[in-house]
Length: 125
Image (cartoon, rainbow, N blue to C red; front, side):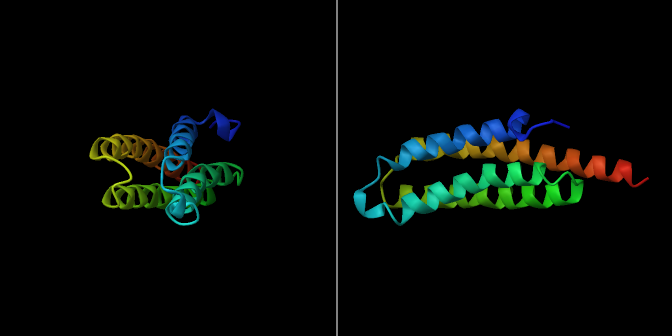
């Protein structure tokens, strides 16, 4: 297991997604500053924060639970991006680009969760 959450490939991928979301919301209308912008920023930050917090728990089951929260936040990011598309703040190409990045992050997160579960099961036998 990585000695620091910053070494986790899944955290790095989600960090890049978070940074891209931060840049994207700067292009949204000012009236969305405390609405959609805020929701997207919070959800994207929640992903990396939950991965980091789970890693810091030093217990496979707790780490898995925080990663499940991160997975939920990734899905929330996608929903907010669909909202942005519906409001015509982003194009379908931009939405699909983010959809792909979220899908890749989700697969990495699911792989990390599977790894944690395998480690937990191997220590219980």
